[in-house]
Amino acid sequence: MPIANVTRRVVLAGLGGSLAGCASWQAPGYTLPPLPAARPGPYLLGPGDTLNIRIYDQPQLSGSYQVDDSGFINMPLLGAVPAGGTSTAALEQAITAGLQKNGLILHPAVGAEISTYRPFYILGEVNNPGQYPYRPGMTALTAISIAGGFTYRAEQDYVGVTRNRGSYTAQYRASPSAMVQPGDVITVFERRF
Image (cartoon, rainbow, N blue to C red; front, side):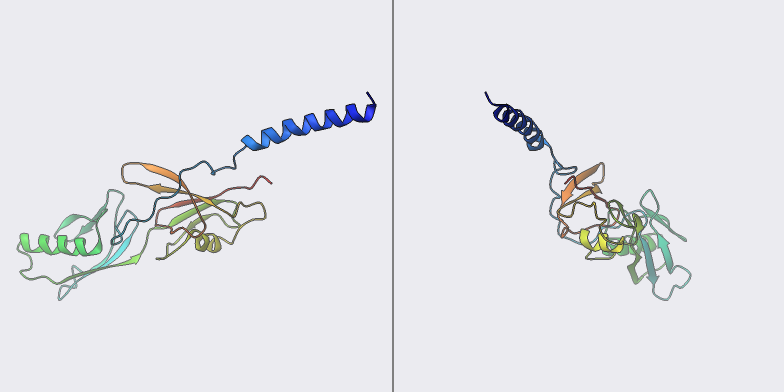
């Protein structure tokens, strides 16, 4: 057998082994489950959100309140009011009920609006990883843009999103057009090729 044929067989055998290894290789984050669609409904408050609460004709009760780590806001005369996991409308109703129940105000008019959302976090192959303020309607690509854009090593077809699901935290694979929520941790993976 000529040497050229032996060399060709050895090279092809080596390439076959290398290609077989590539076929089983998975990009980082690719095996994560896809990010579920956002559930419909109002925004639910969580620790780190800051609210402007106005009780009309009661300036001493009105002000800025932050949802604490246990999901409460601490209001004068009412004490700890549950806010985490509720909408601003539900919080308005809870404050109204508390003021009426305690006989503080017979017919209170309460308004609550979010002044600052809790932040999102981004790490991995972006130019400026870190913590950033959330903005309603953000996508993963918007978040990446806020963090200075992709590095030259970044996987640009998908990202990882770690999201708090109440009693547990889960990580998902998401497209750059996926909607981000406050508190999400976005991971931009390094591409391998």
